[in-house]
Amino acid sequence: SYVLTQPPSVSVAPGKTARITCGGNNIGSKSVHWYQQKPGQAPVLVIYYDSDRPSGIPERFSGSNSGNTATLTISRVEAGDEADYYCQVWDSSSDVVFGGGTKLTVL
Amino acid sequence: QLQLQESGPGLVKPSETLSLTCTVSGGSISSSSYYWGWIRQPPGKGLEWIGSIYYSGSTYYNPSLKSRVTISVDTSKNQFSLKLSSVTAADTAVYYCARRGPTNKDPFDYWGQGTLVTVSS
Image 1 (cartoon, rainbow over the protein chains, first blue to last red):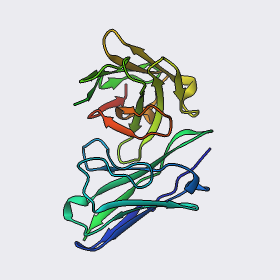
Image 2 (image 1 turned 180 degrees about the vertical axis):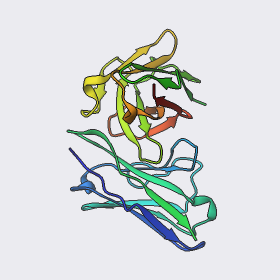
Image 3 (image 1 turned 60 degrees about the vertical axis):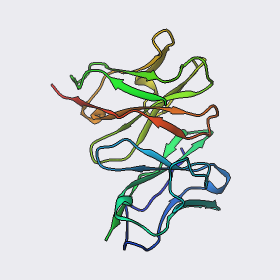
């Protein structure tokens, strides 16, 4: 089965840049989606197909994907960005796969 | 604006069958080629895909749950449903229904608010 690996936590100061990684075997050949989940709320799609942003998502959110690592980058981090972030791919053998999630803490 | 709403019992006894329904409003399940899925999240843990149903009725399940899961669609009511049999405490989770785009590589773009199901006697 296909496995996605995320760091459990990332901390960043307000105004700085946060980078959350999602590791997987040759993930660069797959389409990666990222979701933001705040406490008590449903996940919200923030990046799809590696680097596209849904309408309403700030330009501060961006994504990249190459080799064995996909990265969600949040520029000029704000307190409101504090949340759990999940990566997700589709794999031909495992179907839908989610990463374990990363808790972003704004210091 | 598409909306999804989960409904069903919040408490299920061990060994029984968990049954949830997702009602879709603001769009028709049968008029567009989308996948409709179920995802769960145990308390304090991450997201786990349970399975999906294509608008045509084809189903796809997480291999780890496949023997216990049935997803069906009722186009007359614009609903799709989840049944999970022989539940244990490990099935206690918030259950979300969500829509995925027309290809299996698409993201889940609309989600319900989620419903907590507790498995306990």
